Structure formats: structure tokens, C-alpha cells
Image 1 (spheres, rainbow, N blue to C red):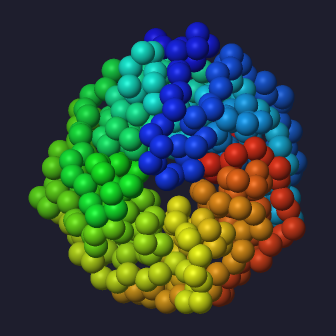
Image 2 (image 1 turned 180 degrees about the horizontal axis):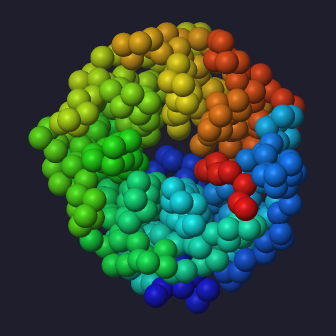
Length: 410
């Protein structure tokens, strides 16, 4: 087992031509002793002993400044109030998080370029205390590629899938009976480049997401301008080429993240470099994608520089949201029954560089992680129009990158 505690994760200075803010953070990522500092979390109770009225939010960060690791917050579902509950310290650059469906284990990428003397990032496995939400380190594994930036957990909790940005590849890890990670069962190396020579000189896997049926895995390759499509072998942890193994997008687009419509028949892709959203019709049986529409995420009168970051859909499938870094806003779209989008408007994120954001499972609130202003801002979602209104609740969190909701533990 490789252990962050021994200082085996060593970030290195990235190439000067890399424009991503992520790379800037990795230059000075420090090492810390891995320890857990989590107080017991108390919850309001109703008759019958059930806990209600709030959700928990895990926050992944870059540990390059004041951040010490992974933070835990409580969201009040009546007021939108967001309060810190706990901190897991010493975790190096836990920039993206994945939570198993049974909520017993949490997985975090360690977004660095060197791990245990290898040109690789790492992935850390944690056991989740079922009373407090505390995280206890189980083990780490090398991700087999530099700068891992995305993690997904399969529906059965048997495998963890990783996208390595600089490595340009995808890795699958088996989950052992205790939640720790075994040696990789598969690795797929990306190929290709595109027209933006400073950002697309080679493959850059930016996400890997399993479909609602746990049958297909989709990966956005920002460097090759492709959406990769795999059949997921859930028995053996293998990524097998789908009948149509990829979809090419417009050169220079830079696909980054994607989300599924609740029906599973549409996929929405956020394109980082062009600040656009592309709608695909999806064949649930074959996994294939067919492009339907592309819309800008920016107002028509915006003239500054911008990159897209994240994309999510409301639980009822009626509204789509995308984050803009530069315009510092959330773009809001209405979704028609055929998957088509209509722009509703834009809402300021009340902070700088909105990286990740998340919609709570009830669809009542949207939380934004503003990376460069060190805050998380809470918005209430208008259930009729999809528009956002600030609740006035702002949590000060250093370099927030990823938000993951879960319900309170018993």
C-alpha cells in the first residue's frame, strides 16, 4: 500500500504552456500527514427517531494554500444554511470525489503528477463512519496516469473508474470487501490531438461517467475532441469498445464533462474550450450518440475570456445548468421533451472561477464551488422556471473543487 503519510505523493512543476488553473495549483501542492479530525455531527430529530431537514456535503479541494483536505458541511433544507461539520486533514489535492451508493466508502483522486516515484497521480479509498460521516483512510493506489481529475463508482460498488487528465488515459480499480482498492483491472490509453496546440497537443481524459444502467462508460477527451464510448464489463472491471467507440466533436471544442437525462436517452456535454453545450441523442441499447444541438453557455454580449467547467441536470429532467469560468456564472437551459435546449438566462456565482457545482437530490438547491474566491454559494432553484436566487448563504472554503451530496447518517 502506498501511503500519503510517508510523503510518497510528490507534485512536480507542470509544463509552462499548460493553461489550466489546475496546473497552477499543482506547482505548490504541499504534503501533510494524513489524519482525520471529525467531530460527531448532530442532527435534528423528528418523532420516531428519524433525522430530517438537512443533507451532508463533502467538499474536495486543492491543498495548495489554506486547504488541508476534504471538508464536510451540513445543508439545511429549509433555510439553505450551510455550516461546516468536519474536516479530514492531510489529503493531498483531493480534487474530485466519488461516493459509493451504499455510502460506506468514499474515493478521492489525488491530483498530482508524481506518486511513489512514478509519473502518476493516485486515488485514495476511505471508509465512511456511518454515524458521523468521518473518513478513515483505507489505502491508495497509483492512478497509472498524471493528474487524475475525475472518479466514478459503479452502481454495485465493485469498481472505481478514474480519468487521468495529463496521462490521457482511463483506469479501472476493483473494490475489495473492506472498501479498499486492488490493483487495476484495466487501463485504456487515449490517442490523438486537435487544433488548439496549447491545450490539445495530446489526449486529455477529463471525465469518465457510467450510464444509469451501469452498462456503458462515457469519457470526454478534451485533447482529442472525442467522446469515448465503452461497454462496461461489470463482472471483470473491463472497458470494452462499444459498437460505435467514439463520437468526434467540432475541432477545438474541448469536451470536458457530461450528464445524462433521467430517461437515459439524451446526453449533455459541456465543452470547455468553446464554452458550449452539445446535446446528443443516445441509444440505450447500443450506447451510441447522435449530435442534435450545440448552444453557447455565454450571453451574446460577453466579450471576455471564458472556459466551461461543469454540467448538471435537475432531478426532474426539466432544466440543465453549466458553469462559466471567466463570466463567473451558471448558464440555465430549459429542456424540451425531445432533449432540445432553450436558454433561460445566467446567474452570477457570487465568486470567482466556479469549478464544480451540485444540485441536491430534491432539486431545491444548487451549490457552487468558486475555486479562486474560496467560497461555496447556495442558490434556491425556482421549480417553475429553473432560475436561481441566492439564499445569502456563503461558506468560506479554501480552493473548493468538488461537491458531493449525501443524506445524514444514522
